[in-house]
Image (cartoon, rainbow, N blue to C red; front, side, top):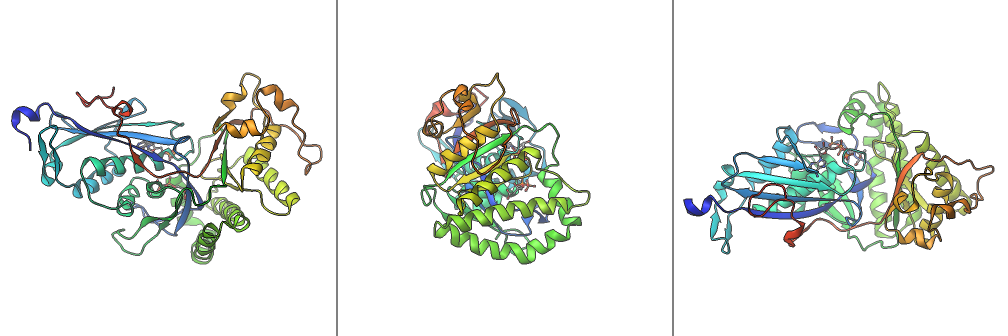
Length: 420
Ligand code: ADP
Ligand code: DP6
């Protein structure tokens, strides 16, 4: 370690950026609640961090008196079991660190005694059903591994992030990712692997409809616990359905087979929500708007004769819509904006966020342009549901975690180690 004099001064820190992900074959149910071991494999698409991401800065200094964390500018407690598991597991794997510039050496065993400061920011709403916990825990583990010079590979890190939130393990990779459920009791083989990188299927365009929801939803954690305890459909799904779907989904992704990809994605989302209905008491995550979006996509896909768009819904009413290509995405956005125009006080620029070039391709510049949108041909007497969608995010499959070397992106002050 550095000398006593130096040790009062130095702060070592690292900043990372990590994406969220959306499951196309869902994780729903644990066989071990503490280690977060799932009852089935799952597959996800990583979303472009340019539009949805977490940035986390982690710092260590002998001047820190305890582990502390700030999320979106507010201090939060790290006492919960999930944070504690991640911190314990990553400390266990910490290595020696030598920083010649700062003239310091942190030995492997020093990490047990040193405290951490963590600041994190989600560039999208936290705890709103957009998987902030997935991006958040993945970013925490990824950044700490770099800070502590842990020599684990990405899959081994994913097994640590998994203990923060199951779906977080899939955010350690870009592109298309599989969480292998594993068999070991200690969870060491329950980890994520990359199936294909983010440019593998470049045609895909993703539109997320953030659906207004007044009611408080059942959390994924308690919802899946209740499903495991009470749903017979979940038992059937785990044994008979998911293993076959995983194989078919891997094939579909490998071959860019959109028809199979869409069929599997929609069927799996629907079965996950059927399991929720089969839970006692039943859990309702989707609302009328979610159902209307499903109808819109189903009718249009049928008219085209081949799927243009796949839909999937997590534990909430938001729709994640994956279009086969840009042309389909433009037509999808036109349909969505026809059915769900914004409230009069919302301008188009804040109603459709993310990759706005799709809006441009759709020939839509202002809210007034929406009035000229023709009703979709597949529906007679189509109705409009103004204000039922809060906003849309246009995005695409994206890259995995990266380190940000530019100090201006750090969320902690390099001198003090406290939030900037
Ligand atoms: P979401 O649908 O956004 O995943 P959840 O309610 O499932 O919402 O998870 C929210 C929780 O995830 C937060 O209370 C916090 O514990 C954790 N979380 C969210 N963002 C971060 C972050 N950037 N870093 C660490 N943990 C985070
Ligand atoms: C419906 O990962 O949020 O989004 O492991 O208890 O933190 P915990 O649950 P979480 O559950 C995600 C469920 C899902 C499906 C999925 O992402 O695979």
